[in-house]
Image 1: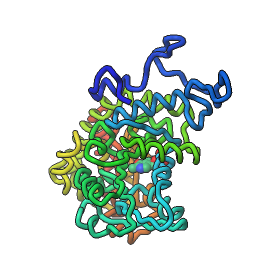
Image 2: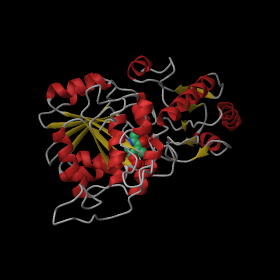
Image 3: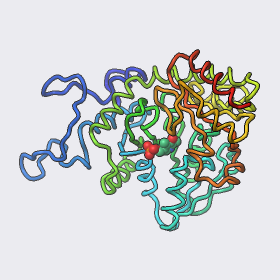
Image 4: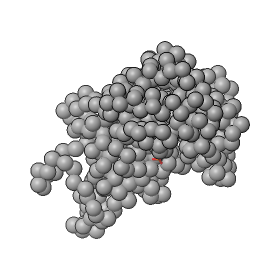
Length: 387
Ligand SMILES: *Cc1c(COP(=O)(O)O)cnc(C)c1O
C-alpha cells in the first residue's frame, strides 16, 4: 500500500506503511509482541486474530516493502528461503520450472533436494541469453525464476525481455531482487509477476536480522501466496519486522554510498597488477554493462575479483584484511569479503563451478559504507598476499 503522502522513493522508504500509533502517538511502529488478540465476540476482531496469520508490526513492514517495490501487496517471511519456498508452493507435481544457472545456492538446493522428490522438474539455463530461455520452455512450464545481478558472477539478465516472454506464454516470472534492491531496479514495473527478497541483506542492511519478503500486484496471486504463508508458517517475528523496517528507512542513502564505494573500488582494482578481472556491472568492461545501465540506477554494492593467484594465495588474501571482514552474507553497512569456492559456493561441485565461470581464485566483496580510502588501503595491503 502506498503512502497517501507521496510516491518519491526516499519519502516512501521513511514513511510508507507507518502511521503514528493511534493509542499513544508513538512515532515508531510498536513491536507487537503478542501471539493472540482479544475478540469482542466470537470472530469479531479488529483485523487480527493470531500472529502467524497477521501481526501489526509485520503489516507495517509488508506495506513498506510493497511501496518500495512499486507493488500493491507485500508478504513477510522468516527468511529469504521461506519466501522462495512459498512461491514454489504455487506449483504441483509434474510442473516444470526454468531457473537461472547461477542461482543463489539455497534456491538451487531447495529445487534439487526438496521439490525434485515431489515431482517438480527444473531446467537451469543461462538467462542472460533469452534464446536459451525460449528453448527451455515445455508444455508444463509454470514458472521462471531469475536473479539479476547473479551471485557471485554478477551477470545481468533483461527483466523486461524475460517478463515479456513469460507473459506471452502465460508462465509466471519471479525475480529475486536481493542484490539490486528496489532502489536500483523494480522488476514489477518491468513486467515480472513476483519479486522475492532476502531482507537479511540490503533491506535490513545492518547484518542483525534474517528475513524474507515477496511483493506482487495481482490480488489472485496474493491470495494464494498468503494462504501458503499462513499454512506453512514461515513468518517473521515482530522484532525481526521492526529491524527490517528500521533498515528500509535508510535504504536509499545506504545504497547510494554502497554504489559509489563499489564503483571506486572496482576502478581501482581494475588497474591492480595482481588482478586478472574485475566483475562489476557499473564498469564498461562488464559484458552486460549496457543492460545494467538501462535497467539499474547504479552498479550495486557487490564487486567480484578474479585474482592472479592460486587457491592458497586467494585464501591468504581473504584472511589478511583489517577493515573487510571474512564472512558469508552481504548487504550490511560493513564491508565483507568471501571466497566463494571454499565458502558460499563450496557445495557446488568443482567442475560445475568452473563450467559456469566461477574460478577458484575469485573473491567476492560486499562493499560497505565506510570511507572508501580506508577500503582501498585495506585491499592494497591484502593483495600483497597474492604474490
Ligand atoms: C541470501 C539470499 C537468499 C536467501 O535468503 P536467506 O534470508 O538467507 O534465507 C536468497 N537469494 C539471494 C540472492 C540471497 O542473497
